[in-house]
Each structure stands twice: as structure tokens, then as C-alpha cells.
Amino acid sequence: MAVDDSQDIRWKQRFVHFRKAFLLLEQTMKIEHPSDAERAGLIQFFEMSFELAWKVLKDYLEEEGFSVASPRDTIKQAFQAGLLENGHVWIEALKDRNLTVHTYEEKIALAVEQKIRDAYFPALLTLFRKFKAMEG
Image (tube, rainbow, N blue to C red; front, top):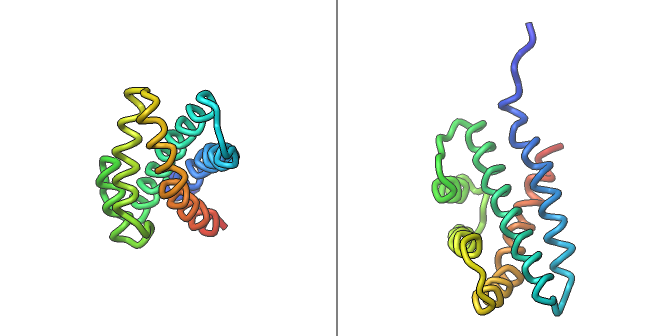
């Protein structure tokens, strides 16, 4: 009888999608002086990467026996478990992701772009490298 190991690889399956979104974000980060359209793309790739990142964390934590429901719960538990180094950066990213999803104003876009470049992308990069090493 085959053992159902789909739960144990769920985070790996989700990581494949996270990798694709993250690599698009990484490519867009190389644009030093983005146009409005490029900035919107950068923010969109951040939103996709962030969404998939917290879901990878959620799947991984659930595999490890934790019960998490929301992005905030997942971030807090991942920080406590040592999966995230800067919990406050992830909570700020969550707030900004929620803000950018619902509105587009140039002033907000410029501020969020700077936060992505300075803090959020490095945090996502650290997580990407950690899970890439774990996927074997």
C-alpha cells in the first residue's frame, strides 16, 4: 500500500511557484530607474512573491506539526521557528502588500518600491536561499 506523502511535498510544490515569481522580481530589481509601468511590475512581482512565500512557510510549518491560519500567524510562527530572521520586516511587508493590492497612488508606489529594494527583497532572497537548500 502506497503512503500518501502529498502533504510532505506540498511546500516543495508551492516553492516551485514561489521560485518563478521570485526570479521575476529579482529580474525587475535590476532596473535602476524604472518607468511607472516597470515600477508597477516590480510591485506586482513583490505581491506575488510575498503571497507565495508566506504560503510556502505555512505549508512547511503545517508539515512540521504547527497550526497556522493567517499570513500574520504564519509569519510569527516562522520567526519563532527560526525560518525568518527579521519578523518585523515580514510584518511590514504584509502591511504594504495589503496596501498596494487595494490602491495605486504614485506616492505610495515610490515608497513601497524603496522598501522592496531596501528590506523586502533581501528578506525574500534569504527565504528563497533557505528553502532552495532544503528542497534537496
